[in-house]
Image 1 (cartoon, rainbow, N blue to C red):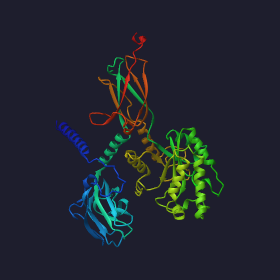
Image 2 (cartoon, one colour):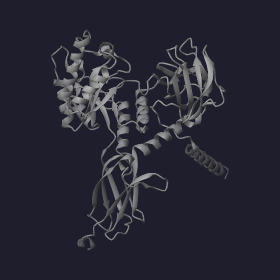
Image 3 (cartoon, helix red, strand yellow):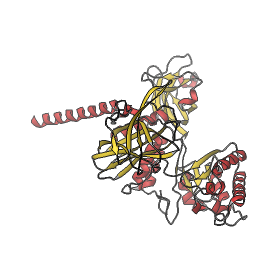
Image 4 (cartoon, helix red, strand yellow):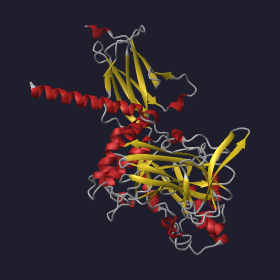
Length: 542
């Protein structure tokens, strides 16, 4: 009896713990993914009302804040008729980049922290970074933004630490001539479980939609116990992978790739140094072959890239050009490659890495990139133009992380972010090694990283979901589906051999803005499809 009673109490305790965890997740602060790129006259309220930050809007003067380094720290108040009074903090007379203002926090290992602030400068424009000084993890940059004078710019980022302890938040700018102003500062913590829960909620809101199927008979009455079977024809979430010339003539590589991806980009084969190694001698043969391969398999292609602002990656003969000679050569490059592939590519990376480098701006003036984009738009007005750069979302500085864990992390973060409209893996196979990480071995068997990608692709295909069910007494069956196209087959025991087959598009919410919205009891939008079954044929009553 004692053993039975102990087992019962243990089971009850585990149940209570599970219920408590669910309640805590339900009550946790929802993640705010918003970002305002507009420079404002007055900053809005801080995200999460500041979260862990003491006095985030400086309505209590400098309470909670102190001098960091040798800066002069002041509390100021401005007034406008539209917004009224606004309080903020200023660091002036700065001797070194990190001289500013600071607040102390206790950060916990295992938690994720999201950070935001609004910043401006006294004059000029200057990059401003938010940095956490920790005892064990060193200095961690949690966000940065380009601050200007006259209006407030938002910066947003986050951090996690590998050891619990105190940390000092401070702001820095390499330009010590400018004053750093800050307001509406926030720091919000999330547990790993909360973060994962928010990711899943974001996926449900931004990538999927509840679809309700209503099945009626020919007289308009609900049909109970009808089986609704759903199969995905394609999904609307572009996921692709880079390829290179190694795929040409390699059937194993082709089979592995085409069974997984419907989007691609060429690793190097469209770059200027590949096409025109000697001035005036263009060779598009390899790029043409890769494009033909993609077209033969219905794979959409991104164009990468037309020009590269890194001086290291110019054709050797271009590096020595200046002025009019460089301008003419670059113009010919833009016109040649865009004219050749007009209407055949879905995107073009016109200028590569011009956040980090400025080869053309140094030689042709500050408007060089702008002029190339304008010319590209004239040559092909339908293709979407991009600026491509690195470390704009994250920087893989955690060298202890395995490639598979890194791939999983990136997929989860990007897939759950509603602003991300596609994912491209830069993992073209090369016998000498891939960029960052390979997905397969030399025989095109998945590595662990490839398994992670497959799991993600299968998730988008509902491979792990039950895709059929029966209607209730009101004739309804519902399912949460990824945006895309589906075939729906409806059958009933009283109608053997007389399945109704329909094709439906599950669309994002914004595609329905001209129609009446449907919401369920939990205020979630849903898409309704009503199916009226034709009368059964006579021979089915025998």
